[in-house]
Image (cartoon, rainbow, N blue to C red; front, side, top):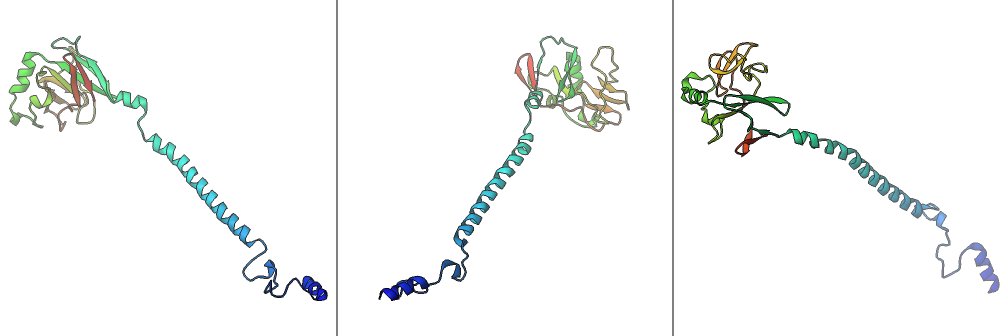
Length: 208
C-alpha cells in the first residue's frame, strides 16, 4: 500500500481524488496566467476609457466656456444715458455695442413736422409714434449709421448740414433723413434703425 501511494505521489495523481492528473498548464484553453492576464486587460480598458472621457471633457470645457460672453462684453451690451443735461433742440452721441447712437431732444416744431408727414411721402413708411416712446415723443433715439453703405451722417452738431428735412445728411452719397430719422432722399433704402431702449426714469434711458 505504501508503495502504491509513493508511486501515486511521483505521478502527480491519487486514484479516486484527482481525476485527470493534468496540471493547469496542460488544461485546454488556459495559459499559466490566463485568468490574471484577462482581468488585467479588462481593468486597463476601463482605466483607459475613463481617462479618455476625462480628457475629452477637459478639452471641450474651455471651448464651450469660450462661447459664453465675457463680463466686459455683457457690460457693453447695454448703455445707460442721462438725458437731464440735454436741452430742447440739442443732440448727443453715445456708443452702444461699438456703434454711434444719436439722441435728439426735438423741438415742438420738429415733432410736428415728423407727425404731419404723410406715409405716401416716405420711402420706408413708418409713423413718428412707432419710432418714439409714448409720452416721450420729443426724444428720438436712432443708430447713427446710414443704411446705404454704413457711413455716419451729419446732423448732431448745430453747425452740421442737416438736409432739406432738418434731420441728418449723409455726405457720402447724399442720403437725407427727416426729424424722425426716416429716409427722404438719396440712395439709402431704409430709415435709421431705432435700437432697443427703455426709459428707466424720467431723464434716463437704457439702450440694449
